[in-house]
Length: 142
Image (cartoon, one colour):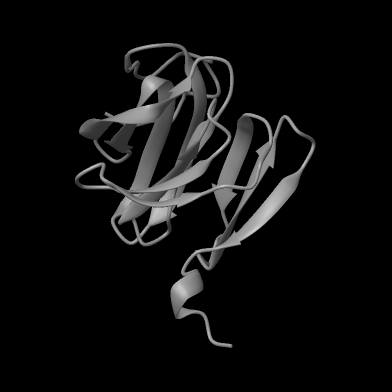
């Protein structure tokens, strides 16, 4: 299967189901090829875009019921997610283990994305703020 659509006929090519209302999705180029990251309900699901296969589904400590999303790092080894609890979290792609948690917003996180080079990511909140975060703050040069 393929995630592309037939522009001439405007027909759907494939359909995938996830648990919950889809709040966000991202098709990202990574070192592992194109990955589709989907935030829905209380899960983040990761699909291989070339054959539409489900690679991982991780239950999150946050809800994507009315806000939030997820974004895959260009290296394909981790993703960020944010939602109802106001925090931006980093997770290991393979295990779903939380590796970092960043506080700073005073309202639910509405959107977030990695920069194309993977060195930083941005998050936007219901509190009206946009924050730019360093991907590896502990390894950044002074």
